[in-house]
Image 1 (cartoon, rainbow, N blue to C red):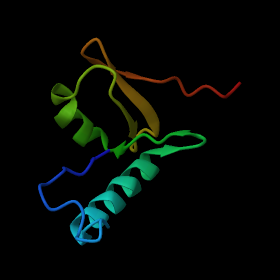
Image 2 (cartoon, one colour):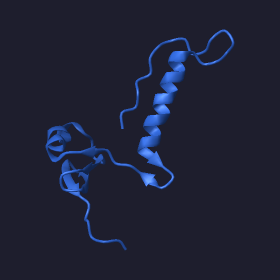
Image 3 (cartoon, rainbow, N blue to C red):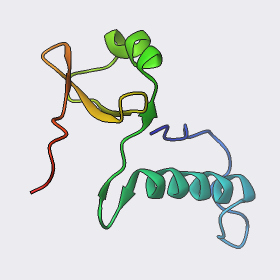
Image 4 (cartoon, rainbow, N blue to C red):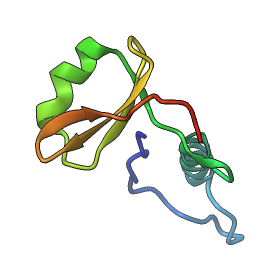
Length: 90
């Protein structure tokens, strides 16, 4: 989830309404959050196996992805990538 960076611009105008840059910022922030969260659970960011291998050293333990090549959920635990079992539920 790429949370947009906050930038220094006037927050409100003379009538105490959000300025256009702040409206755009909050619109983007809400869009990003809604794409990653829902009432039904978390959405893991999709990533290919090659890209996951490239970034795994930069990410902290507890980070999770949806690996699109194998169609598996993968977490980084104790410095290593671990896949979630894909056995049927329940």
